[in-house]
Image (tube, rainbow, N blue to C red):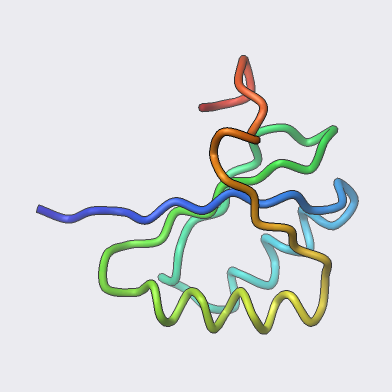
Length: 82
């Protein structure tokens, strides 16, 4: 069985597309889903076995844009995705 590690972030709404673009350069590391584009809430889903690689990618991306990881209970629920 394959699992996924899920992390949630606040990103400036105007930087969501750039965040996606940067992650696409590290193909296979994970999938970014926008949950609330107005508030800048995104979900990063990481396949099992790639957490260390994804953490490194997030560190590098964090040098380009402001990322704030948030626990799931701070993520707004509702129509946008969770």
